[in-house]
Length: 326
Ligand code: SF4
Image 1 (cartoon, rainbow, N blue to C red):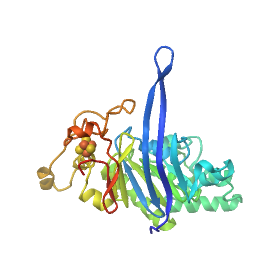
Image 2: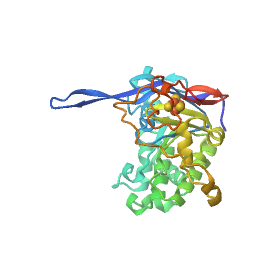
Image 3: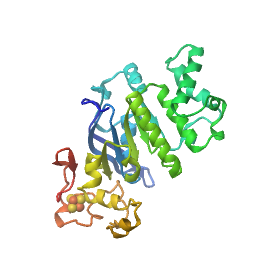
Image 4: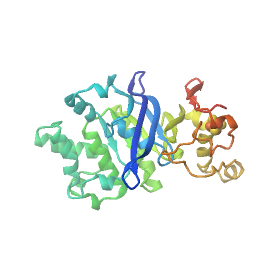
């Protein structure tokens, strides 16, 4: 259930990376990975954050998790600005923000059994100091993610991709988080397994009141799980809306193009509908285009788009878009 107060607020987040190059390694330029991004996520809500590779969605997640230091802007978690916290307070906050990675195999230690992988955070963070109770807690966590008691004795390479992702989820749950950043958690899995993992995440959200930032490169994946969806392009949010509004009535030409690439199961409808093919590649964030950064690929661009940086405006209640023609 979503309650009214934001658990997380991202305010005007900017993350630049400085790139060196040339013979003498001088500064070549600035990659504007995240460029003035703001959003809030309410308790119990899932915000889908979608965009092509390199759009800044993963860097946004890493800044929230404090794995990257923001260049500018604020990140507030439970109303506290993370930049103002001391190391002890920050450690406690980081425990309440967990991550599930795209590739569970590379994020699980291959020399540890599943039981050891889940036990480790319980012991290190003294969440369950008593070893006997810890063992029972591991079994409980395995049950929550749909694994069997005997899986505790297996190694990651003895599990399927879906089972490994379940272990990654159990390890995150062990920390009793409030927020989980799901960083493309199903992209490496077969389509049939993707739905199982998404259903599991939804069940866990209901059971434990979890809040998710669900990062994905494709709008079809986040459709089922998200309450609201933000679409990113070249470091900026170009559209943010309730799921239904975004899928039924997309206002930004980039969102329309992404949606037109999502196949519809009905072959007749699929044959009749318009497919918008975007020309060219996503420009380099090292040399972003002037004005609206989408203008070189935008099918409805006008001259003014080269000069004006469109603000993210609330076009309809709760429906925001960054386009001068929206
Ligand atoms: Fe396209 Fe112009 Fe809107 Fe940018 S501002 S999305 S270029 S129409």
